[in-house]
Image 1 (tube, rainbow over the protein chains, first blue to last red):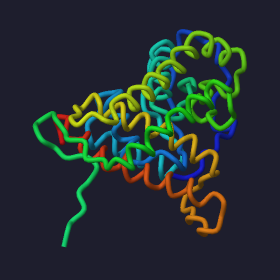
Image 2 (image 1 turned 60 degrees about the vertical axis):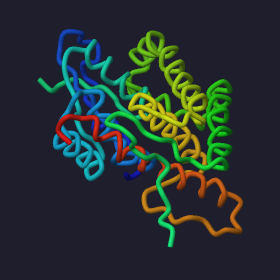
Image 3 (image 1 turned 120 degrees about the horizontal axis):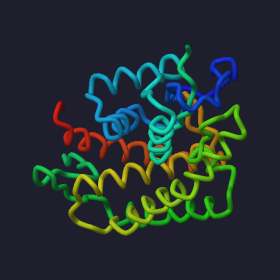
Image 4 (image 1 turned 180 degrees about the horizontal axis):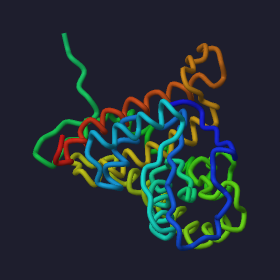
Length: 97
Length: 158
């Protein structure tokens, strides 16, 4: 997977204090994690099918990032934390209005 | 001709035989403590294991770290210790294998960050001082991939 680069313009930071809005968990590309490992983590964490986990992983690999889950802030934070426990790089951003 | 066997062999629906050679176990048993020491020292080389959730909001990031930071450190330590303690086990189950791939990933994150790995990177020349670490990094990728081949079979749609 290609080198991870997070640029601020890719992330909506306009309403980070909004607690009630929906949030997206963004998984970022990196050069170390194996594709097969990322697929395994997405299946283990979210219960995704092989097809869906592979599609999301390849989106990360080919486009640098992918939205792998979404929901209220508390759930999104829990999801990001779960991915961090597996060594994946996940961030949160607010769903656009 | 002898066909080399993999590090793990399935011996039951949810049971696997650990086929690692003694010298592999010896090498692998040394690596988790390097990661644990780097975590204890707050080394920049383990920053990849603790990525920011809110990279552009220091307040939200600080609050998130306060609530999750300790459990994240603990999770990594438990995984590394679980890996070390099961390296000599002759039989492994899916839970063991999941711990193995997670711990190997942590070790690869440390080594990969130290080596400044990038996509398509060629192995350094054998005379390069980083060569041996790169060989270990590549070996770990092979080992992790071999185990992941078995782990996928626990999911119902495989």
